[in-house]
Image 1 (cartoon, rainbow, N blue to C red):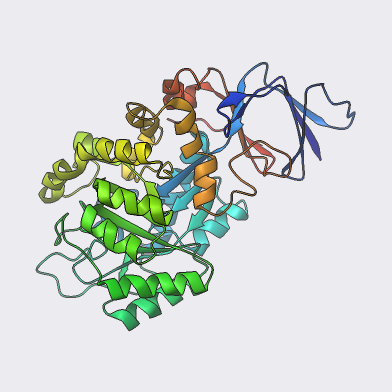
Image 2 (image 1 turned 60 degrees about the vertical axis):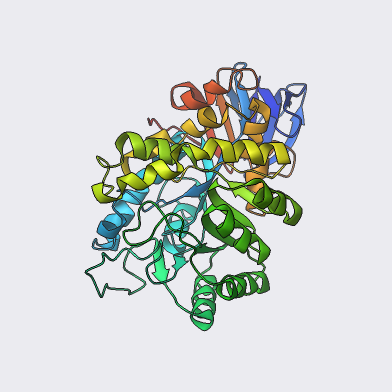
Amino acid sequence: MLTIISNAKIIDVDQGAYVDEAHIVVEGGVIRELSRLQPRMADARRIDVAGATVMPGLIDAHVHVIAHTADFAAIQRQSPFEVAAHASRTLRSMMGRGFTTVRDVGGCDFGLARAVDDGLFIGPRIAFGGKALSPTGGHGDMRGPGEDTIDEAYTVPGLGRRCDGVEAVRAAARDELRRGAHHVKIMANGGVSSPTDRIDSDQFSEAEIAVAVDEAQMANRYVVAHAYTARAITRCVRNGVRSIEHGNLVDEAAIAMMKERGAFLVPTLSTYRALKDEGVAAGLPASLADKIDIVLDAGIRAVEMAYRAGVQMAYGTDLLGTMHRRQLDEFGLRAEVVPPADLLRTATVTGATLLRMEDRLGRIAPGYCADLIAFDGDPLRDIGIMTQLPQRLSLIMKQGVSYAIKTQ
C-alpha cells in the first residue's frame, strides 16, 4: 500500500537543514521518493502533516528495557513473565517519545526483540546484546558481600552474566552470539548500581577483553564496554572495543585514542541526573547512592572533550524504572556544549552508523525504512523542542506503520 505524507518540513539531518521537498511517498515500509509536488496517486493513503517538522525516528543507543526498577538484584528474583509485562509498557512509552529504534545493552534477549518484530508488543525495533559479560564482583554481579550463590539460569531475568578467565569469556561471548546478539557487552569498570565494586575498579584483564572482541569480530559483530575512567577506556579501545558507554571520567589521551581507532562514545548524562534526583525512590539501594556524585558532574566535560576532538557520539540514556520518562532530557543536557544540528545527528545518522544500520535507518531518503516522526516546532533553532516531543508529536511511523501513542 502506498502512503503519501504531505506538506512536511523535512529535515536533512546530514546537512542540518530543511530540504525543498515537502511530500514523502512510502511503500512497503520503505521511503520510495521525496517530491516537491503533490504526487498524483489515486489509490494512496494520504497523511497531511500541515507544515509540521518531519525527521527520522529517533535512536536511543543505550537502554535496558527490562529495567523497570533501579534495583537490579530485585529483577533477578522476579518471574520472566512479569518482567516482560513491564518491558512491554516501557517499550510502548519509548515509541511514544519518538524512538523507533533502541539498542539494548544488557538484559533484553531475542524473545523481547521478536515480540516487537511480530507485533505482539508495540515499541521500537531492538538491537539487543543479551546479557552483559561481567567478572565476579563486577558491574554485572548483583550479589551482596554476604551472598555466595544466585540462580544463574539464563532464563532468570537480569542485566548480566558472570564469566572469569579467557576461555569462560570466550564461551559466554559465543553463547550470546548464538542467541542472536547484535553486539557483545562487557563490564570494564565498576558501576553505580552494583553492590561490591568501585567506580574506579578495572574489570576483565586485557586478554579477556581481547578475546571478547575476537569472538565478536569473527561473527561480524562488535563489543560494547561499560567504562568510566580513562584507564578503563584506554584498555578497551586498545583491544578493539568499538563502543564506549558513559565515559564520564575520560581524559584527553583516551579521547585521542578513541578518535584514532574510530571508537564511538555513548554518553548517558540523563541517567545520572535522574539517579541523583530520584534514584532511591525508583529502587536504587540507598547504600549505592553516594557513587552517583563521582560521575554526575564529569559527564558534560567528557561530552565537550569528545565533541571538540571529533569523536563520534551517539544518543544514549541508560534510564531505569520510573525514570524512563526522562528519555528526551539528554537533548537538553548535552545542549550546553553540542549545537542542535549535531545533537540531532547523534540520535539519527550517528546512532544508525553505530548500529551498522546506516544504509536503512537514520535518514529520510529513498530506500530507507519509513521511520518518521512529525511534530510542531523547529529543533534546528531550539533544541529544547525535542524534550517536549510527547506533547508535540502528530505522527509516529515505524516501517510505514503509523502509531497513535500518548505517553509522558
